[in-house]
Structures are given as C-alpha cells and as structure tokens.
Image (cartoon, helix red, strand yellow):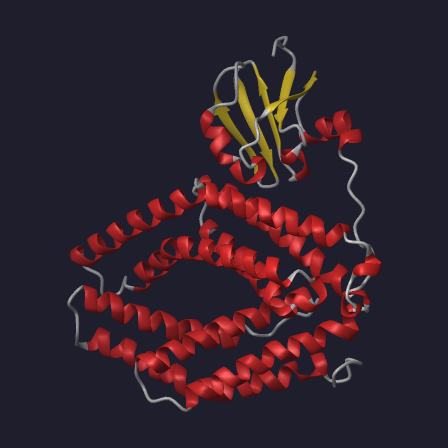
Length: 371
C-alpha cells in the first residue's frame, strides 16, 4: 500500500476484528503502532507488511485471518478510524431486556472480551496476565455449567467447556509455579531457586505452545459461534426459563450450585486425613468457583472471598508439600508448617461454609421461583 509521508495506513481483518475488540493497528513511515485500552504499543518495521511479531501478538483477535489495509487517513488514532469505517461497525441486534438469557449472555460476552485482552497481555509478558486469562476461562466454564437451562445447547456447552478446561490446564503450571516460587521465598536456597526456575521455563513454554496451537484458535472460533447462535436464536424458540426475568430464574439455579458445594463440604468432613480428603477439598474449591461465577453472572456481588481464600490456602499448602518432596525435604519445620496449615484449613471449612451459606440465603429466599 503506497502512502505519503503524512498518511497513516490502518490494518485490520476484513471483518474489522481488531476494531471491534477495541484495538487499532497502524503504520506511518515504517513505524507501527497498536492502540489498546491499556495504551499504545510501538514496533519498528516497514510499510511493506505487518511484522510477524505483531501478527502473533494479535492472534486472539484475528484468529489467523490476514491483516490487510482497511483505511488510509491523514492522521492516526482509534477515534479517527472509527469515524472512517463506522458504517462497517453496525452492531448486530442483541437481547436488550432483563431476561435470564439476556443477562447471562451479556456476562459471557464480557468474559470473551476479557479472554482476548488477557491473551494479548500474556503475549506481551504483562504481570498477572496468565492469571487473568485463566479466570476468564473459568468464568465461562462456570456459567456454562450453571446455566444450560437458560442458554440451551447443552451438548455444545459441554464441548466448549471441555475445551476451556484444556486451556486452563495448559496455563495452570505457569501461574501455579509463580505462586509457589513466591511462597517458597522464606526457605528457598540456591537449589530450590534453580528447581523453580526450571519449572517456570517449562511452564512458560507449555503456555506458549497452547496459545500458538490450532486447537486454541478452534476454541476461540467455537466460542464465537456459540455466542452468535445464542444471540440470534429467535426468542420464541427459547426455553421458558430463558425468556423469564433473570431475577425470577437465576437465583434458583444458583441455589443448585450452592447445594453442590454443601454436599462436597459434608463429604470432606466425613473423610480422614489423606489423599482422598485432599482431592475432596480441591473439589470443594472448584465448586466454590462455579458458585462465585454463577453469582457474578446473575448480577450479585458474591461474598466468597474469605471462603475461597481458605480453600486456596489449603491447596497451596498441599502443593507446597509436593514441591518439598521433589526437593527431598520430607520433614523439618517447613514441611510440618505446611501440613499444619492444611489441617487448619480443613478444620475451619465447615464453619466457614455455614457462615457463607447464611450470607447467601437472601439471594434465593423469596426469589419467586423454586423457593
């Protein structure tokens, strides 16, 4: 594309995926600029084509579609680009009401945007980016698990949920190693630092392979298809629960998720100390996450922080003991301290859940359905 010195060429996919995601990619005299909600990113290159580094950086938005010139303007900036191509950005119709599906689907859209933004942050090496990406994936899985009655498409929800589980599993070591290396600081020495450094490198490579894989792009495309299908299905074909006001339907479904947590906490209390109880507490943790995200999607402000912190402390203590065993530290004050921390968490779990359950009761008491 030929430009004059004063001109700025903007690149995007044919369907303007970048601009729809709040990004603008431009080049002027060989200087590339990516405008993002977090600020601009500059790259050196030429006017002849998008630098490969930039193309890889934007994969969550482009889905491997080619980046092509879409505008040729006398100045830069995302606002100027929007003005120039505004007629191509007409948003599709979306459910504007407070129906159960409309509310949950809006939450899903926010998490899709968060997933793409976190992907960009991961590729830029931004702090906490892997954690943000895992949380977005978990939130999507959580609402797909809690609300199939209002979203419909149970088979597709399960398939996409399974793909999100795969993504979380590929990202988990990078985040977990970061957390446990920090936890080891009080007792770490040269050998343990080398051990965690090797784990960090291996986990980072695993995460990069996942984000560069075809399977990941297929997941992103499947999420787009799911959102489109749910949004464009004629309202008359929705299930009754989907059409009803969210305040009448979602609390009942949240209660189902809470009941699952309740049963899992009771199971922990019935188990002796050992691997089976450790797995049971981990299952409580996952169920509590589903409850939190179901509440968020329903528009509630979940007060689960203290309960989740307790479960997180237990899990960190259990994993820390595994790292200690890998380092041949099988006894001593550090190992004993982690074992004691895990035991304290299990002991506190029933009362913490009881208090939380009482706090949550108003969310479904008098909801108008299923009470």
